[in-house]
Structure formats: structure tokens, C-alpha cells
Length: 510
Image 1 (cartoon, rainbow, N blue to C red):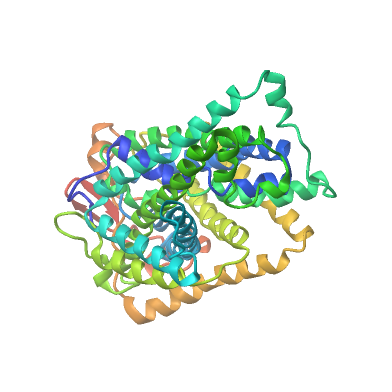
Image 2: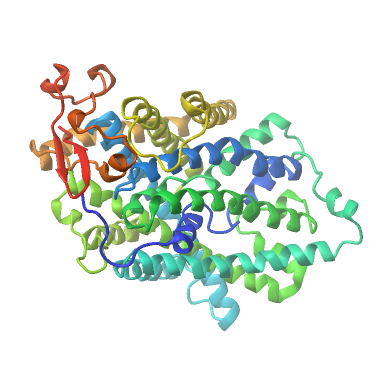
């Protein structure tokens, strides 16, 4: 597996910006939660969901990223802990989820961009479906071009975009508070219940998947871990910063806009520009609309940076053509993988998606479950790996952070079934079922018995901390009953050979 050390690398500011856009990218998309759940329940969901959903995931990602900061991120973690089959499922399901997300952003860019262009010029050139697709195509290939220049360029673009997106909403919140004569009046605007005719349980179910979707993506940027400076420190700090920023980014604009209206009809998708205009006039409305265009572009840029590394990692392990594994010698960018991603997303931008949030969250949660399981297995099986950051509480702590998001997912699924969404859950199950089929098919088509690249750990750090014993340069494999695709040697309990090269120690995957 390539080291990712060529070209400019991501520092704390640029990595934080990329992570912010991988997870949040602005408050756009949170409006329908107020429409579905009502003001008070929407505020509670925005506050409570990250504590159960985001924080546990961020803790897991922080430990694994700091301990194994290699290109491929979550694919490498699961592969090292659970073996080739489950590593492939992790990468495949994550790639499928990326098609959903990356199909949404260019379409939104076309919708917002056409409206802004009309406001500036008075001409409706891009209002048609074909015009919006043209704008979406411009976004896709501009972002591909920026990413071909390397992770550092993409990171700094994310930083600039973040400032431009957040600033209008800070102004919006300030103007909203100034416009009220008393604090009691402000709080009173937030106290509305569920929409008429809908009980609390129904409102909770309607809003929960949307909030979970808006708060997911913490592991996405792990695929560029090998391109981060001082990952053991940078990644945990960035995760902590973005957890706080994500809550504020969603909460403050919602609180501000509710001072204008809590009417569900005014809180549909894309409502923030109009709500901002009601608070601060035409200038603020236009600034928020431009921020939407920049925010969607930033989301697409950050996710292109992370998602393009998935086919690169699969190419390195011979599940996809090896051309996809090649990185530019100067920038470190996976050229062929980026171009393939651009082509796929150009066609996906033509698709009309429905029920995306539910499918996205369910499939994403399956990848999270594998990552949490990998965290537990590596803690038990490889305790001597240097971990600059650890999930607190030992094994009970890991069990707790694993249980919290899974309980929340279970609650969301129960509510979805109760509301007649079983068909969408069936589609999610069908999407997950493509993983084993793809593993067998691609293994026959491309792999043909060739071994996976090893997943390295920090041997020099282990020696320095007295955690490495050269007479025991191996770790016992997980029992065969836990995973698919074990070798005969592993089933016999044989020690796994170790490669020593350039200060790393790594087990050879079958």
C-alpha cells in the first residue's frame, strides 16, 4: 500500500476543513427536520443525536486513525482486524454509499447555482433540467481537476469554502437575536410542537433519519490518513473540533430562522435563503444562497478527495484493475481513480433519487458496525500497537460507544417500519447483498490468487515505547469461525509471516 507521503500533506487546519465538509458542509439539508418534527423536537434531535451518533463514531475513528494512519483508512482497519472478505465489504458498501451522496451534491449545485445565476443576470439559462446538469458537470470536473493537484490543494479549498459558508449564518443569527426585544420572546419561538395531526412518535421517526444523515461521515476522510501530517495528533484534535462545529452549524441557523416562522410549510428543502431574507433583507438572502452553492461545492470536493481513494485501495489489492492504484509521483493524487469517479458521478447526476436518507443511513451503519468490531478485535488481539489516542474506558468503553449508535439506528428502523417504510429498508438490504456477490466476482476477474497489500503499524514507535518484542514479531489470527476466506495455515493455527521494511511491521494477508 502506498504511503501517501508524496506531494503536499494535510495539516491541522486543512484536514479539519476537509473533515468539516465530509460531515457537515453547512446547515443546508437540515430544514426538513423542522418541517417533519416541529421546532422543539427538531432542536432536541440536533442537540442529542450527535452525542449518541457522532461522538461514539468520532472516538472510534480517532483511535483507529491515530494507530493505523494509512491510505485506505477504514478498509485497511477492517482488513487487518477481520480479514480480506470483510475488508472488501467495508470498502464496497462505502463506495456504494458514496454514489448516493455524490449523486446528490451536483444536482443540488445545479439547483442552487441556476437560482443564483438568475438573480445576478436575470436570465433563466440554467433553470431547465439540461441546464442544471450542465452546471453539475462543470462542478464535477472542476473538483476532479483540483483534486488532481493533490490533497493539500483540496484541503485549502475546503478551508476557504468553510469560511464563506459559515459567515452568512453567523450574521443571520446575530440579526435574529437583535430583532427581538426580550430573551423570552426568542425562546418562545422555539417551543412549537409536532406538525398538526402528527404525534410525538411519528414526528420523531420522521426527523431521526434526516438528522442522522446530516451527522454522518466521520470515517469518510480516513481514506486520506496517509496524507496527513502528524496523524496521531492531528486527526483526534480535528475530530473534536468538528464535533463541536457540526452541532453549532446546524443549531444556530435553525434557532435564528425559527424567530421568523415555525410554519412547517416554510421549512422545506432549500428554505434557508428565504428565511435569511426575512431576517436580514435581500443582501443576507443572496449571501446565504451563494453560501449554498459554495457549501455544496465544498461537500463535493471533500467527498471526492476521500471517496476517490476507495477504488485506489481496491486496485492495490487487485480487486479492481491495478491502474486505479497508481498515484501521481509529484502530487500523490490517484489520477485514474479520480477520472473514473468523475465519469461515474457525471452519469449519476442524471438519476432522480428517492428515499435517499434511509438507504444511505442503513448501508452506512453496516460499515460503521464493521469498524467498531475492528476496533474491539484490534484492542484484544493487538494490544501492543501504539495508540496515540484511545477510546476511554477499555473494553467496556468500546462496548458502550458501539452500542449507542446501533441503538439509535434500531430506533430509527422501528419507526421507519411503523411508518410504512419497509420497502425502502428492503432496498437497503439488497444493496448490502451486492457486497458478497461483488467479492466473488471481482476475485475471479482481477485478483486471481494475488495477495493483498499488508497493513502496516508503527514498529519504530512500538520499539521506542517498549511494546515490541522482536522474538514475537507476529500476532495470532482471529479464529476462522469469525470471518470468511481464511487460509489453511491460519486454520491450523500457524504463525503468520511478517514483513519488515522501512520501520514498519505488517502481517501478510492471504
